Length: 150
Image 1 (cartoon, rainbow, N blue to C red):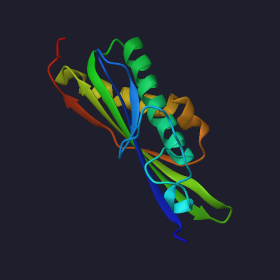
Image 2 (image 1 turned 90 degrees about the vertical axis):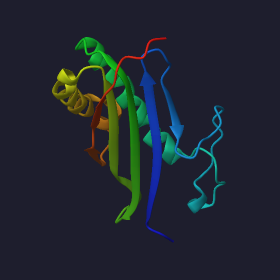
Image 3 (image 1 turned 45 degrees about the vertical axis):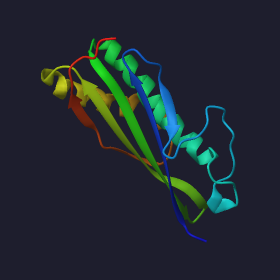
Image 4 (image 1 turned 180 degrees about the vertical axis):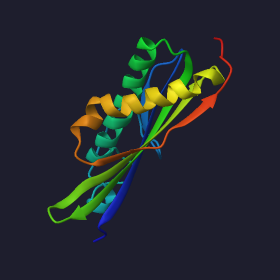
């Protein structure tokens, strides 16, 4: 049996839309789940492993929204991809690393440095991130884009 598996999830929120989380390969809105195919489950369903990765992605989005609001940062959106790496160690399988890849879409170039600091703060204060024993790596990207009016 292979000893390393990877799970991908992304979450996002934009100015005038609701926040959502989705699997890399798509899944229906109703949450049907299974064990992962590599552990005898059915392909194409959410798994407990995806739920954990999605919890981190959605917590990062929600925390960013709160921090941005409190810091009065105007932004267009936040998209967060998370890659969870499950590996076998002496105690068995566990998530050894979670790579958080937020893309903050800001409205003004002058907010780039402040946005970087806010993303780093979000990593430190996100409840889910602070509750996990896995290594968490932050790989942020900041884009500047004109405001989209609705």
